Every structure is written in structure tokens, then in C-alpha cells.
Image: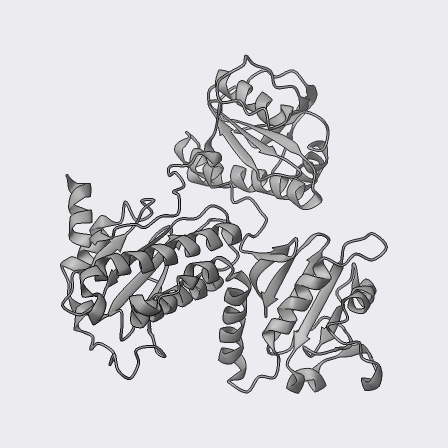
Length: 485
């Protein structure tokens, strides 16, 4: 580092930029389009810098001024000894719990303070894997800065792009250590490899369904087995084809295939031990759980953060801004969410018209002699079935179904997407010509679209992707001052 003193700023910028680009790309594959940013300070007496090329942290200036500029308690912590802990140790700084953000960072002998940020996507199963990702990002930057420019390889960004499975493993291990201590016998990487391998293995053309339960060997005697295989004939976990065949035995039941992480032990009645890792297969996708908590989903041979259910935040916000009372809006939102999630689960496309006018608009379609009260369970179940019929279901602010198989017409507008089907573009045209209308379009192979006034509001993006390049960090003080100007 001393030999490179004239170029240290360039070197630090290179390290931060490579790390940030790799982190952003990796998280975008794991959670959907994601931004990343970092706030860091190299030494206790150094300025505190920020690198936020896509404006992820805008809106939090007041909080950062309070945390970092008006208070100095974060500077008062003794720095780690750069000689003893330069490479091998990092003291963690936990999530700051800022609205809409996930954050994690640390302190080390080479970087006095760093805090990494990314978006908290609304459809994320758990923040744990993303926190582990940010934790490792802080470790990589510390190592790169400690190595200095002569030994810098630039590999951190590449490694962080492919960190999804490692982040899942790190979170599982943290949970396992919390419940079992440090002497657990289950090796997590083989378990994760088996889950992804089985998820891609078809049997007679069918994708896997059912549950596979991984249990710490010491808890096996406490398990209630319906059938237990002879030790000499227990199928190995890495024999994916055999395990896939056995999974047929627990399809469409509460039973579970049980493994100790090395082999398939038998079939249990479904009761969970003190600690377990569970893979639930639902055809081409599935979910990974630790005990009762869903950690992530998996599909096409990779792990994802998504719950695979639309959160419908834009619908909820529109209802809050409407003339409906909060309780009325909440009841209507629950009805809409049930219909949408039913279509997602059963993989068919449908369209919902949420009509917030005091007198529902007239729409061509299958009219009803009397509207159906969707607060009644049997009417709601019928509406879920009617949503399969070509055309849209028409739901009023009164929480009644006013029609189904409705045809949405309208004049052509700018912003139509020829890559999308007639259902989506018809909804754009219809909503552009009718006030107080929300249209929810569920596609069998795409995310849910929420449309108002001729615009798909949940696909609007307030930031632009940036090309991989070297960013120049600026002082946090100047960054905040620019927002005040």
C-alpha cells in the first residue's frame, strides 16, 4: 500500500467498483433487478465515503446525517489491529433496519468501517441469505484492500456474481449452529446440491412433487417412521434418480422422505424434529425451509429469493388512497389477493377489474342476475373458478362480483407492449379510458401486472442500469449537501 500511495484513491475506487458491480449482478439474478451501494471509511480519522451509482440511498439523507455526521459513536470503536487481524477477521455491523433496504457490513484491520446496502424486495422469502451475501461482500473488500494494488486480482466481483448457493449455505449453517451448536453432522453443500439436482430430475416426464426432510442423525431415534429402510439398502442422497423415484411415495400426502444428509433413511409421518432442513417440491419449482421458516425458492437449477407470489403493493396503496375506509379497503384487498394467488398457484392467466366507482361501469360480458357477495366463502371460491374463463372478472368497491368473461376494449395508446399478449394490452387500453379502475393481469408465465390509467404501475422503474465501470466514491457530506441544494 505504501508503494502505491500516489494511486491509492484509484486503487480503492477499483476495489469498491469491482465489488459493487459483482454484488449487484449477483443479487439481480437472485432477487430480480437490484441496486447496491456502500458507505465506508478506511481509517478512524479518514472521511466517510459513499458509492451509490444508481441512487439507491436517496431519501435516507436525514438518517445518514444523524448516524454518521452528527454523531461520532461509530468512530469511537477501537480499530482492529491491522497486523493481527488484517486478513482473517472482520467484526460485523448488523442490518441498520432502514425502510426498503437490507444492509450489512463490518470492520476490519484494513477497512475501519463499511456498510453495504441493497433493496428489500417485497416478494423476498427471507432477508437472511441477502445479509450473508452483504456480509461476505464486506469480507471480500477488506481482503482486497489489505492485499494492496500489487496483489489485487479483481476476482471478488466475479465470485460475488455466483454467490447465491453459498449465501443459502451460510444462512443454513448460522441457523444450524444456533439450534445444534458447532457439532452438527449434516454437510449443507451436498444437501443443497441434491435439492437442485432432484428438482431437475423428471420421472416418466413428470417433475418432482413431495417433501424431502433432512434431519441431524442424533434426532433420528426420535422420529416416527412409517417405514425405515435397512441400513445396507438405504439409497445414497447423490443417487438423484433413485431419490426422485422414492419421492413418488410421498406425493400428495403429509408424509416426508427422510435423509440424514448422506442417504435416504425412510418415510416419516410428517412430524418435525427439533431442527430440520426441508425441501418442498411443487413440480418445476419448490421451497427450501429451515424448521418452519421459508428461506428461499428454487427453479431451473438455481436458488431464488422470491416467494413466487405477487405482493400487490400497488393495489394495496391504490385502495388506501381511494375513498374506501381502511377496513373496507383491507377486506377488498384480501379478496383480490386470494383470487390472484389462486391463479398463480394453478398456473393460469386471468384478469381482474377492480372498479372503485360508486356505480360500477358498464362492461360487455356475462352479467349476473344479482352480484355475488365475495365476503362469502362459497361465492369467492366460485369467482376463483370463473376467473379461468376467457375475459375479466368485474369486482366492485362493494366487494361483489358484478360480471365475468368481460371484454376490455379501448383505443390504441402509447406504451403498449407488442411482446405481451392481448390480455395485457387490452387492460392498458381499458384502464386509460376509465377512471377509478385498477386492472390486475395474471399471466401464466409472467409476473403479475397492476395497471392504472393506461400504465403498468408495478413495472415502472425509477433507475437506469449502469454499465460496469470504475465509480468515484464521494464524501458522504458532499453527497448529502448535493441533495439539499
